[in-house]
Image (cartoon, rainbow, N blue to C red; front, top):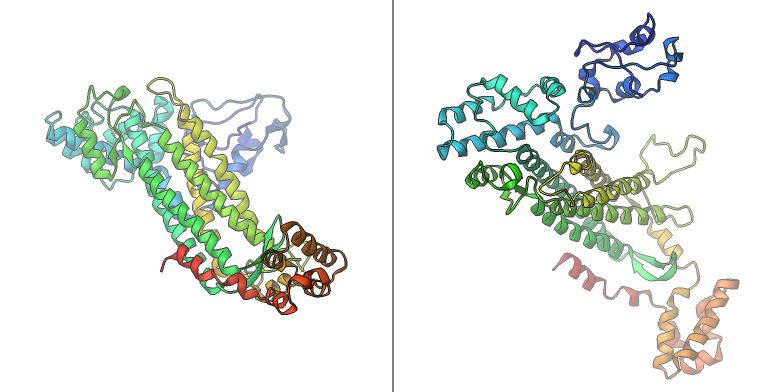
Length: 517
């Protein structure tokens, strides 16, 4: 249930039956002005999201309802709603999705379209020039919302406000032959392109961090794990290099996804160019750094956007991949690496000893959010005939939320990698925990090379290995004391099979493949 505070901007009070208003009953709400609601998210929650029965007043206990006459939903929640929450948002990305930014793009589309129309002789040049008088103007978001409360149409509300700025006669040719989707879809794609540019900055920072740590720990030995169980030796550098290669692929995917949505459409109703020349579209797209959509209906095809958001979902999954590895390494029993624990930081409200992997756990959750927005984007592809607007509400949500969340996550992960505390000594300790057991494959292969059947070789090696598992024996000692093993392999050759350098001899080759050179 929505509650109402004092609404001076709209001149409306919310009333309940009886002599007293909600405002009278809950004085704390008086201070909140709806026009500033997004400046204080806490206030928003207090004013608009409190169930009526919880209000501490007599009126709240009444089983009644109230209405807000003349107040639109948009006046409560200006479109689009602010993305995410400040805790997981970076200002540069949030700014792309602000109402101010959106209206500025709308203006540029309309102004460039007027220029093209004037060049074709469709509208007077003076009218096209007059539109540019609004360049640099801070469009009044509250005024546009006020108009939309009546028109129930956001583009018309904007155009009305634009005419108030430049004059109704000067504005009469604005939007000539265009449809709202020309403006909305082209704007959305511009926002996605700009968001992509910021995401690429985040990816580049993460790639740089992964590369630096890869070279730092190129030869730092650690145990590789399969099913979470000790497998064979690897290096920490290879772990970082693996993540680098994955993120490099993601960068290429994002570049392609950016190109996928970098199109614009100024094709008019149902996309036939019946009332507007294709040259207008070409000019607008050129001025805004877009490619004309080859064929649009009344909307730009949504398979492009599905691909874009799917790419964001893949990147999010890769973030979780790195985060999960770090979370595992930080487990007390493993402790091969951990998130930087800053002076004054607290790990637990109850247990002062705790140092928790809170950042990477947070990244795991944020990755889930981004992936959750992929399916709605895929479902947006199927629209009725030349268009419906079932995609619109989805995109108003997932456009800002997915990009803001992923932007934040990329920079958070980059910071984690940059400051990650690595413990080579613990890596060595874990590697040797099972007393040479991880060299079993080398011994197996040596026995087969010496003429022992694979079945017998496996039996001999496993027999020694199980004693390491079960009674903590030393693997090499067990092999050296087994006459069947020593009959095939001299002790010196068995000793040689425990050389750790054997497992790192191709590290440089792998690094050259990943990083070049």
